[in-house]
Amino acid sequence: MNIFKKITAIEKQADDFGFMWSDTAQIFEQIQSECEEIKENLAQLGDPPHLQEEMGDLIHAVFSLCLFMKFDAEETCLKSVEKFERRFTELKRLARAAGFETLKGQPVDVLMHFWTQAKEKVLSNSCSHDSSWQFRFLMQSDIPHIVSAFTDIGWNKPTSLYKKYLKEQENDQRCVWVAFKNNDFAGYITLKWRSAYLPFREQNIPEISDLNVLPQFRKQGVASTLLDRAETEALKKSPIVGIGVGLSSDYGNAQKLYIKCGYIPDGLGVTYNYQPVKFGATVRLDDALVLWFRKCLYKE
Image (cartoon, rainbow, N blue to C red):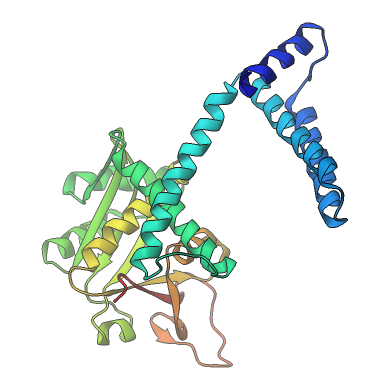
């Protein structure tokens, strides 16, 4: 008998008899309990039959949560497998592009590096292929929508900033991409061809600058998609792209995103208003204090 049908049938029998969960918290507590029992068994090198039994109990508890939420168990598992398959396919592509025919024998940090990149890339592609999303270059008509959206959340983003960006885009000094979902502004990113950061400027490394995504549109692949657009454009002129990130907690998510996407510190320390901060110096922690990252856009 199909295991999905069998577990659904037995759960229904229990429910019809009144032996049922009253809320998700109870089921989650049971799931945690089963995880702890499995952990203890593994730590004590317990007997395999008992371990298998505990693992079965864990699977059953997760199925119970799925059914309690009125999700079809088989469909739920299938979606998970399909998601893993998409990410694994992308992981293999990224690893081979980096020169790895296989990842056998590689340390776990290498495995997780490619897995994290694959997840970000798949999420980005999903966002890009959703017809409700639009990613394009900045236009004059976008500026009032952008300023209004940031004003609504209390961010000071003046009209003059985007007029300056648009002018620089027209003069081929900067590229600016905007993201809209169902005609609602979601975020933007810019790419400066000539960085104000001296080490980048001297090496003709373009700088990705001012990546912003509105809070309600985060964790939907918007930032990754915008980064991908900027990196693709940068590669037309340079094999390396740079980016600066602030050091306060406000930039925490950006810091994690850049590292996940393969950016590494350039090793030259931090700057304040683009000037190197010398050892022992005292500086103000604000948006002008920046750590600089670089990313090689292809492997030779």
